[in-house]
Length: 234
Image (cartoon, rainbow, N blue to C red):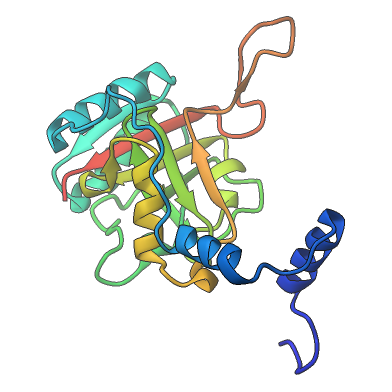
């Protein structure tokens, strides 16, 4: 808590930036212009390939881009079918039947029901690096590039996106957008107050990889070596 007369960490950072630029806080027309831009940010150029696509076309485009990014993709008609889909994918990949899920997926009324998959070992929380497979929800999926957008908070720990070798992401049809610009519009609507913004926004396109070693693609260099996306019709 900041006491009266003390500067917050944000104010300290902004003050340092202003000092390095050799100016003070904005006033007058400049301040009004900055406030207007923040309140109504302009949209950048929207690529023609996703402009005006119908919802079904966005899903088709998203699946194409996900596959191009080396993801595997599954589809299901409801959230109730997701645990069985996950168990089947783990079996196909010859992976252990155990996962760690984000707390958001354990919430009463909107979480996953694992009762129909009794052989699965399911834990909930933040990973410690020993887990094989994580299961998370996403904030949005960008059909333009096949990019998943995940926010960090107490119910969706960022570690789940990067520490386990395998990452399973659940994408609801209603979360699919065309261009990246639509993600920021949704985020501003979902969290209108500046203080509600997430600490981190992760943009993930395919499993982790690198080509630094002998110019050969190596999977799982800085994160999961497998990224499986389940699209849920909601």
